[in-house]
Image (cartoon, rainbow, N blue to C red; front, top):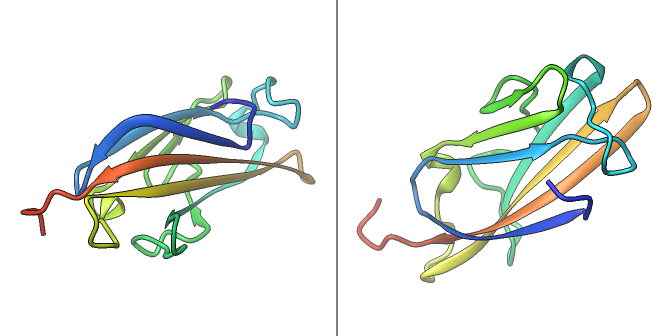
Length: 127
């Protein structure tokens, strides 16, 4: 995860296929990792960018060592595994941009967040 509030990935992901992302949960400086013990909450909102439709009911979904998320104890490394249902195509075009909004709170009052945007290819014969 970069220090920018949005990262756009160049890889194109296939519809309805499992996808894995990694990111480092950091403090406000964008550099210092937040240890898992200091995290109060980590959530995921997954949506299709052009219309904002939430995908697979993933709206502020808990991913702190659950819901497909695993966080390393000391490095702040988040591994997020998205299921085939998370990778569903919402529109009828060949490609669509999805956004994984990851938000976290730590040390009681501090907050951070990052958007990861990625392209999903509509596999016409996949249902």
